[in-house]
Length: 326
Length: 256
Image (cartoon, rainbow over all chains, first blue to last red; front, side):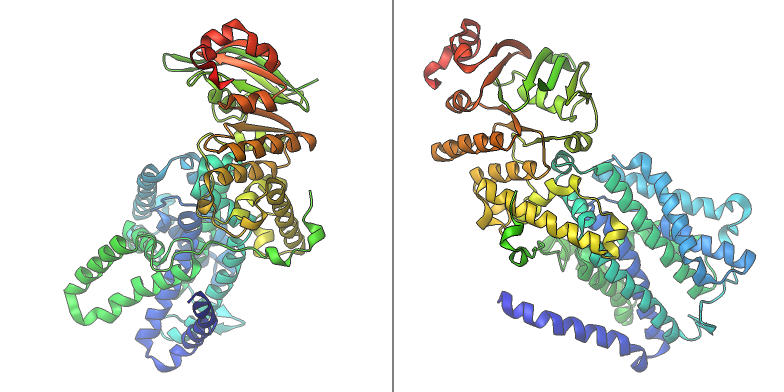
């Protein structure tokens, strides 16, 4: 049983990747745009997964970091005309610094307390944006006229040609998956999983739990910020309503429903949460009802998510006999 | 020369004086026991040493350094590892991964090195894995490496905690009731394990209720009652101390 599952896993992943890559050739603009949204939310879900999935911190304000990245991109691009893709590192840095400042005092909070504080954080950010903080965020109207990304002089307009944008966001998603996979299977990823499993034992084993929690917040925020660049340059305009509390809830649901702590689970979660409502559009107003019911049934019968992470195995059989000595 | 020096340690929980002006010194290389009836404040003393609690008064110095109220992870890096009275393993992870947690503070690679899979990071991971396997071999759990921690027997879970603590290359290991839940056979094996830990040059400080183990394993004892130190010395002396017999052992001396 286990062997069979292992044998079909690789071809299955291969087939899904192939299908994903060629999908824009067969589906229309509308559905390609849906896939673009799935990819953006997959990126947001993966970045939140570092904090919520591996670290086990109930962070319900991820849209705030996304907003900081998107607004950094929009402000610098519209003011000085810096090409948007060059602004990805700047957006990531801004979101990372923002996370460092806001997460530092709340990092020791546990579970539900952290949840409430992060909800407050995302609301404060949204309201600050509406109130045109520092006079640069454009208030409730937001910021218009953000350039589309260009790669080696090739303009990628996310609205006119979603297929072009599709390959841009897919490339970033692919890089992210690889990097996060390596991160998950490293000393850093392990430390987060230890502190998620038992914080006292982790600290007692020599892990700087507060430091790792903060680092998880910063890395998650950097990625959300860079995804903000992709979003701003796709839409051409951004407004505070795109970064509401509801956005944070969606990201939270993607991670929890898909399988927190598992990259494949988060990707599946993004596909289901963003894709399914589109598929069931025929059901009109009932679709959210069905969606909500499906979530409730899921949480009752499979609270660990659709694809929970498997315990990691280590290549102990690859060690030489003489290596194993004190 | 003493490796660990506890001076006038005092801890209050609200109105309760849990640890009252306790002082003792653990000599380097010794197996040192902390005994006393339930609620005497033994675990609290451990938690004060390892930085889980902050003392109201007094100080702890280790290796000629003041470590009072330092963060726990810092104290582990300084060379004090511990196990827990109520077993605290990472239950849903492999046995080997639990031991790797102990290696953590001796490794260096950070998130960026990991994302880029630098050769240095790769090599370090392999060494940590080998080191963890060696520690499992030392406590006798090598064949359980792939198993999940929660599937181990109670006695083996205690051994795994010891392996995790040893993986941090400590100078001092603090064992909080290591024989709790073990049968006689396992306890006998534990006594020899403690001797082998000592043979590695690691100082051992332990709390234990199993008097036969304490008498066999420890060279020095400190007895606490109601947070106060009431006696100290080698086991043979403690056994005869009337204060100890009255306060702690008097009611059930069949333990001896």
